[in-house]
Image (tube, rainbow over all chains, first blue to last red):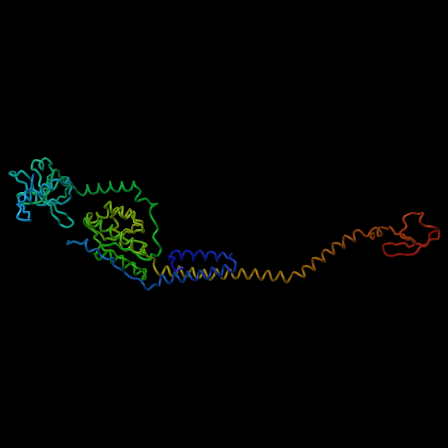
Length: 68
Length: 380
C-alpha cells in the first residue's frame, strides 16, 4: 500500500466513498471498504505531513565549466 | 609540400616555417563552414588585397580573425559596420608568415533579427508538422510529485521564484535542482544534459525548466532544435517557464505545460497543502457517512426480516382460516337448505328419502323436512 502514489491513493479513497455512499455494499464488504478507506486517508495525510521536504542540488559537472 | 625536420640524435626538430606550413596544410584540408558572430575591427584599405575584421561571439566574447579578398568583399556590397551580426562562409587558414590562425572568408551574409525570426518560424513550422507541439502529446502533471526536478540557471530570480512558490504551497515538497547554463552556445546541450540527469534521478515525477526574462537572443537556446526535441521526448512530464508572458520560445510549445512565469510553474507542480487537506477531510467524512449508511441499511434489512419472522405463525393461521371459510361458503352453496326455503320439502320414510310414489304404502309413517324444521306425517 505504501508504494501507492498520492493520486492513486486519493482516487481509490474517493471511489470507496462513492461506493459506500451508494449504500449497496454488503455489510462485510462495507466494513472492509471503510477500513481500507481509513488507511488510504492516513497514507495521503502522511504524504502531506512528511517532514522530508528538502531541496537537493544535482551534482554539478565541473568538466563542463569554463571561465566565462 | 613536404615538411622537413632536422634530426639531432633521436629528436626531430622543425623550422618555424616548416611547422607553420605543416599546420597550414592540415588546416587547409578542413571543410568550409558557416560561422556566426558580431563583426568588429573592420579594416579595409585601398592598398590592401584583403579586408580584415574580427568576428566576436556575443555570448562570451570569443574572437576569430577573418580575411576576405577585397574584390570579393566589395562585390558583396554589404555596407557593414562594427556590431553587425553576420554569417561568414569560409575555411580555416593559417597565415604562415606569422603563425596566425584565421578564417578565410568566401562569402558573408548579414544576419539580423529578421533572419533569426524567419529561421525560428521555419523551425517552428517543421517541428509543428512533425507533431511535436500537438495537444494529444501533452501529458497531465502528477497531482503530487514525489520529487520535482528543476532546471535553472544559477541566477537568483527564476530559481528563487520557483522554490519559494513550491515550498510555501507544499512544505513537504522535495526538489532536485540542476543548475546549468541558461544562455549562450553551451546552454542548449547543458540543459539537455540536465534533463537527462533529472530523468535518471529516482522518483522525479515532473520537471520544471525555468529561466527569467531576457533579450530575444538570451532566450534563443530555448528554441534550439536539439533542446526542443529533448523537451518533447523527455520521459518525465515537463513544465516550461522561460522568459515573460510575451516570449514564446519553442521549448514552451514542446513542454507538456507552459507556465507564464517561474512562479506560475511553482503553482502548477504542487497543490496547495491546505486545499489538499480539506479535500482529504471531506473524503474521510464521506467515508464515515458511507459506512454508517451501509450499516444502517443492513440493520434495517435485518429488522424487517425479524419482523416478518415474528408475524409468520399468525399469518399462517390466518391463511388457513381463510381457506376454511372459502370451503364452508362453497359447501353452504351446495346444501339443499336454500331449495327448502323456496317451499320444497324432503320426505323421508323408513328407507330414507322418498323419491317415488310407489315407495310409500298407505299408513306408512313419514318425516317431512322444511326449511325451518321437521314434522311427522302418515300416508293415506
